[in-house]
Length: 484
Ligand code: GLN
Image (tube, rainbow, N blue to C red):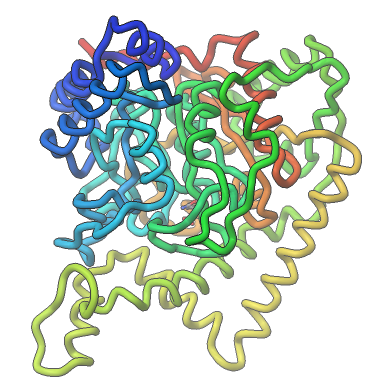
């Protein structure tokens, strides 16, 4: 099986031309052929997968229908899927298996989706390239000498390489949108709270959200329709307005749509090739009647500092639970303190250690006001910038990243350069807004994404807009050549 759309596979399954078991076997086969090159997955269990596929086939035969019944999916390795390992891209959790399903996973399983693999990722979802993984880096299927983007590296590569028509990642500051842009996949960061965080390993809890990735906005909508909805197990979860429109997504009317272009996002530092692609994409929207309006988000220059202060503070607190007592690996020692220190020293990689130290510093007495509290105030100002912009426009369009996928190893020695990859994706995360990355074209043979950001809870109209764009363009249908 090569990249196929979820909608096509569903038609085939419902017509009886395909079976879920046939699709699952095709996925396992494709992974066996391509994984030595791509390293996108960290766990497969053909027994679990085929049992789920057979159950889906029985339901299909009985005439049952759901948006994902019998459809293969890949899950990021920070999501709990009962019985499978939850590795989080780390050594520290080796040996830990999920005792329960994450709410989003449970809803997909109940609707009959078939898990075929767990995906490689940056350790605890910290990273922009996929290289901070205890399993080694996943590779970009468009050019295997380059990074796929992170932290949901394996999830996005799995869709780009045709392992499954959709995958789940998570997005704390850009982790589905950045790899989506690097690999020509459509990726949604929903409004904070639209998807439950129950059973999702916490990195920075005020920013974390599950993000689906797929070949098109239409396919994303189908997946979202199954997962969305409040969850009593996550007090921050909210209902999604317009959810009933997701099942059969209609294109949004472009005529008269006011598309804001934030001045601060189109300044210096963007590669010429990326800029050209984005200009063409914006022209295409304009040609359909959209009105391009320049706006300003004046606190953008503070975004990276704000994000990494809040992120590291929350990381240092969330990761304290990995102490060798409760989960996974444990170092031998005669004393409790020695065991905890030894476990954390051997278990965490460099980036996790860096963030734990930085975050503990930010939160410590005497520095809390200067760093953490100040970052929270800046977060409020960034949020207000967006509110003011949405007084003038319906949606914002920006680059996802200043560059296309960079070569493996280019930024691993320079944490700041790595952090700056997120310069356009952290702001909607800080403001808890929905944002989507969609394929917009190619620069020197590498994919370029366009980011759309909407007001709070406008996830459905945002997908409808991406769908309208994907009806007039073909970029999202381009797939990397992998079969030779
Ligand atoms: N690259 C960002 C970080 O390292 C975002 C990661 C994410 O969204 N999980 O924090």
